[in-house]
Image (cartoon, rainbow, N blue to C red; front, side, top):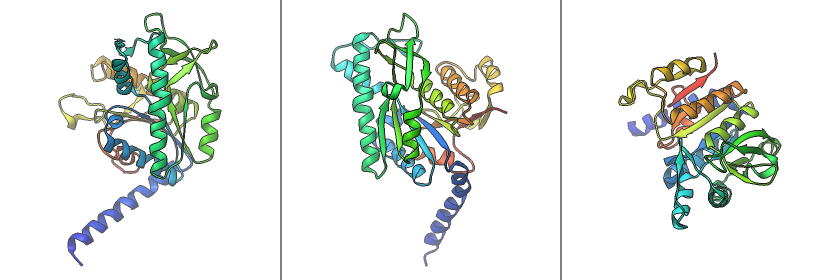
Length: 289
């Protein structure tokens, strides 16, 4: 037999053997995946993500997928001649804009993901935060319009779907007592759900390889961060800009009962599997002591 074939088979066997204890650790546990960035707009990456989620459910891991859809919203607003405005990284959302957000997120983006999971052999149900009284909101402030701050949640619909071994696919809109729709930051929703479900892990897919001590040096990636260390990292300028609210959300998830959280590079195919099912991982892990 060709030596290259033997080496290739041995490598595959080692990979499978290495994955086994990780599968056992996560089996019957819940992970929440916040899905966005390039992994959401690149067809090859999107297919790799869906394959990862289906594989995890196949081996008995409960998966919740929380998605945004900023590029799709921008594209639709542009087509309708509506200007996109952002303040402090959040979309200014007037009544006309929130109608578009609801249409795009809860409609096209959500159902496209559900359909793709189904076509690849998985089982998924698409929901929004308006379904099953899942995410009740109030306005974050006057400046942002219909941008929501979460005030109450109901996880019944998600837990029922997980019990059937299906993947809940959640679009990040919520409601108020008057029936108004609100646009909510996807990191905030994913962290809230991960905390409420006492998830084993929250995975945030980003366009960076992890938290770097030196933004210009990929080798400076920090493998593990205890949440007690975060204020010092902010003071030192290692955590800054748009990373601050993202990590604040992950910190809140951990304080609310999520075991650990990861920032991973969604531009790498199968990054979810590499983070969860290998010894080395690939991103930055956040956890309490």
